[in-house]
Image 1 (cartoon, rainbow, N blue to C red):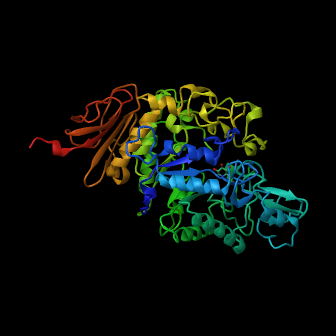
Image 2 (tube, rainbow, N blue to C red):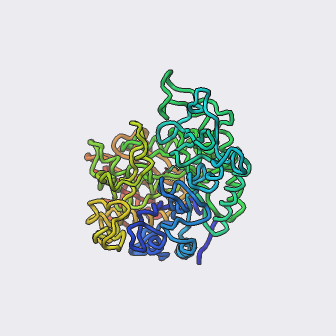
Image 3 (cartoon, protein in one colour):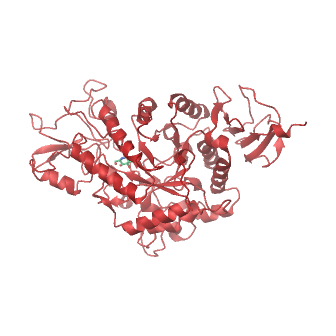
Length: 561
Ligand code: NOJ
């Protein structure tokens, strides 16, 4: 039976699915809900010590609502329906039921900063200046010279304003011109969106990831953003976004959404809080009374280099800044970023991809906070760098002509690699072209092959996940670094009153293990290691072998009486 417990999201491992490319259940070459249902056992078959499943606790689905797919679902045209590409509402209910049966919670991506320009609300709003929804979006008269109303830009490049012939006004869009921003100052808009939220909660979803949750509200006087350098205001990063990002009203909206979430038992509210990667500003999204997001997604690891000191500093910052009673969340990847092994294997002084995969998985799954995995990272999937132009799908990136535009995000969204059959087992349709091309390495980087290889990246993730599940220290213990300024290795403790776990990772070709803080020299039991025998009780190692990863538990009971 599906057992709900409060704050499950603190001790869960979340797995992000990009539905278009996870699994194709009907053989048309595009991922769908049926495909996800068929693959649920891989994610968690509900059995203890399963020999084939990953063991995650929750899935976050990138958007599945009705959409013209200009931004692959991040452009919703009907909040109450499932996109035909993915299936029907019945399919979704089956997915929910089947997931819950396996103790997998389901988190939906909620795209409410903007709608698609094909949403009936926008069609009505743009039909005239005087209609019931005329004020549901951010319309503005042209400047006296006929140009854009102010200097606000689109995150995807170029101006944030598009002129509409019919209304003879501009509308604002923080993203693409086909993604008009809703006017959150309008109470009717808020009420309409809150109905949407209740609808999905009533259906039984376990929570949401709020898309673009830092840009809901804009200055109601439409003031120009100050620019960082005189005369340079046409690049997003050259402005101070005080009038179009992270406004106080933004937090009022999130608080209102949270109060709806709190009407229901045990739901989670997470959100994308990307603000020039300023962790300090992102933390405000917990709310002054812990009444906004449970899990604000901040981007420490995605924007860090592969370097122990840097990674540790990011963890330290987060440990220092996370408010009392709040909880951290960490991830290496998502659908907008190049995959981490592609980002980090560029580092010439570092080790190979295989070693980075294991070391980064260890950090992600042993720091204090909820880990989010992005589909395929557990296999060591890397970015597809050579997608032919005619097969690219990231239309919003392609439509931007500015030289500083968003690069195509397709390389990180290629089909999940299930086995070594054609299409990597993603689609059984023989003659179909998959939504995006499969990466060439699928013959050895795939679920089936890696399950059968003891030393694979997938089996390493599975071991780490099991370990985390069985250790209160790894789930909720304190985090304490043992080296002040690590250059070549990381070492930290995770501790509860009953349990002490040591995590040690050597990033280097050299043997080393210098610690700045003293810890017991005896009675460490090996829980997981690339070099030591699991189960052995050993003295504290003097040296770590090149690239060694070891997780040890202090077992004073084994002391000689
Ligand atoms: C953030 C999402 O992660 C990204 O994929 C999308 O393009 C924008 N928001 C617009 O919704």
